Image (cartoon, chains in turn yellow, red):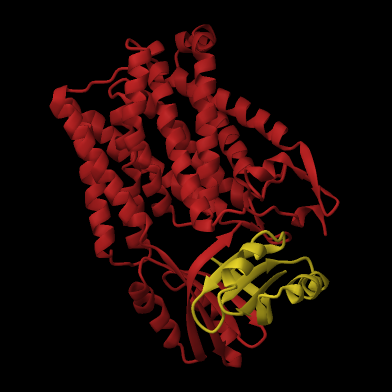
Length: 79
Length: 421
């Protein structure tokens, strides 16, 4: 399964968080972005349980994160 | 978690890794062309050289595959093979489906013919001229992009093409004479086949295993490409070569075999790096960066000529020759950097009506769209766009998505920095 997590950080902490996230084994892409969110990550997960464990055990313990929103990919077309 | 789903991640920034792979590949390419020049001086039969090369290539990639399959460490209790350091998607002894193998086979046919022509041309040109001639493929690929994507080139693309073409021709002319037949064979025939090979490789690398979301890894890809090419080349060799050449394969082959092994080892590493880079960026950019081998071939050929003056020719053509080679090199670098550094990735998140989800194939077919993900959550679609400039992305993609009646809301996001596998 693929999922995206849209993350907002406290000021000036997005780079520190991005560097931490890029080393997580289920994180496929880390993008520091303009717009409403500071970071968008793309995850490769086995099931929803793995997504739950990642968000609860890893992301919710990170002090840089102000809030986040998760979206699971239900279909995808790659060119 | 199953074994298939375990992948390692690179700690390098995606852009850095992408450029690093392409440039390292260029260094290796320039090196093996110099070694091949030496081999061509020892043995002037292009059919035997091509056959020996693919035999050596199969031996190297087969051995490499065995070594890289050795499990060295564990992640979450699962043994990870050594090969994941070269390519995080590496799966030892994986048999890809026919959907991939058909592109590998087509690539093998052209690689076989191209190799014979390559060794033939090495009799005509030294490595410092051969490398620029081989880089002409980029022009075909860029033009292919414009035609297939119904795209108008940007000014930076036009400047890049002009600089690369001028640089290649000036480098080629540095020896003070112009062999029209050899240049035609190199520019039109060999580079035309190289462009087709690159397109077939790109098609094969686009395949994704739906059960694990993993693409075909570069090492496995190279293995099947070399084995296919060896089979096709062997058939051609048996049919086209005369009995003297059949005997010569074993008799003279022994004298150059280890040099060919070195050349094919460098070529194998170069190939693995380029295939991995192909999955991370546009093929025209990768080929631009690979053209760096043009510059490297000059000092490497000079060093080779200094060490083995009889075996590795290097025609400076007097002071004018050096100036022409240098101007050509600067032009090629200018062109390829202009192309390489002018690409950006943009995301667009959208809300659509219920019928809108039926439009995702149409959105995916738009110019510059590399991926469309249907999301469960606040937004319905996440669209990834690769474009040469923000303006071009807006004109050719964003405006068209906004024009779709079922798209109710669209927000664009520029990626400022990214990392990826």
